[in-house]
Amino acid sequence: MDLVTPSIGLVFWSTISFLTLLFLLTKFAWKPITAALSERENSIDEALKAAENARKQMEKLTADNEKLLNQARAERDAMLKEANEMKEGIIAQAKKSAAEEGAKLLANAKAAIEQEKVAAMNQLKTQVAELSVDMAEKILRTKMTDRAQQEAFVNENLKSISLN
Image (cartoon, rainbow, N blue to C red; front, side):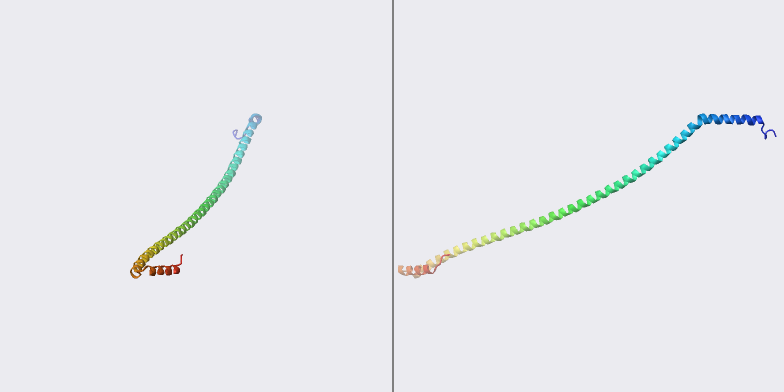
């Protein structure tokens, strides 16, 4: 039973040893341990705050990237729309220019045809007049043999001719 019941000396020396150890730990080890724990707690808090800030910055960057992407899409759409409008304008201008050029060519061709027609008519009139004069001369030579008869015929025809 001696093992189960401690003696007063053992209890006294155990208490003194415990109190001495407690005093020494309080004096020399308690402050560094609490300081280390406090420092560890502060570093964990700072790491959590830094992680939260990083998360917020990532969300902000993601939102900014999305905004920039939407702006780029809008600019691309505007550029495509402008390019299509320019294309339509160029096509319309080309059609208009081609129609005007075609009309000019057609008018020039009609004018050239008309000039050629007038020239051909004038040439034909000249040839007909020459042939008529030659035929009339031959007819008159054969029928009008005297000079007085010929002069009377010419004077009569001169009065009926009007110059154009």
